[in-house]
Length: 460
Image (cartoon, rainbow, N blue to C red; front, side):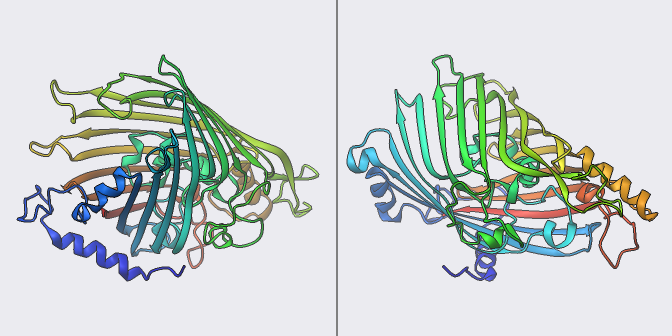
């Protein structure tokens, strides 16, 4: 499948902007700004298909982002993600209770600001990826025991339904680390099964009458075939379906929901405790096979290896306050903490926290205001190698320590099918205080950056 040109999604973006004002939704004679999707009910066909068990959807996400200050260079970029999904309810289609087949594909356009201008680890957009057409999810699911037992098998990802290591409130932000945390996408081989990758795997979820539930999953350990070059190029179409290559990645997670409300699809508050283990061999980021620093001229240049890698995490989502008789308004918060060994992982600790308020402005109950921050600490080995490099070369350069981001965002609901999201991000110590590339002066770190942008999300 050939990728659509970037101008295709650009046109969608600006057509959406011209369709109506960026203020309070207004009603059109044809009900355009009242219907749930831009294309409506297809003269009743959409409902007919869904009643028969066939649910088709498309969603376009477009970003315009600029860094007027800092980074490697100043620029403005466009990027777009068209997501197409197909959900088959086999109970409706063929009378197979509890069975589902789900498929998802991407059309990615444009170029990412982090890759092209910032050089940072915590990518400023969660849709940033190399352009192209890509298959993502393709799985079969069977639910049993009144949906208390769920087994999923096929091509799946960590971020499916925001299950493993995810915060439901963090997903409102644009920076990638508030979705799939960068302690995973940076440390796992080829970025792991996070956007834009899904891999062959199996997931089991078991619920209890108390609300407590357990999820476990096993994934193929590397979404791209081992080799040189960018992993997104090596698995450009998402159809490698690798099994048994690059080790195995396993997740286990316990979730305790509280503040449960029967009228909501998900509990507004829960606590997740989980961990992951990867069976592959990981290179030491400071020492060679003889125990010398890799910066030492006498080093063999061959990094020592560690058998396996692992991490632990906790995620707290909490509905903090809600006005009386206001089911759709309120203040919510999240806190997410994860760690991994610092000798074989570039990021050894990541802490995210944020607050969101829905309905802050009068008459705008559907709008959301959010403020969040993330801190990623560079692991001890990478920090030590930076110090060793200064010692052995005599050339002053930054010692890597951490990268952090602060994001302020606002989701403006123009219509049920259209959200505009102005966004502001401050990036501190891009690349973990990495050295700026030429032609910057030798030893100068990448400057802190300010990112301004807007996102348009359209549901077709």
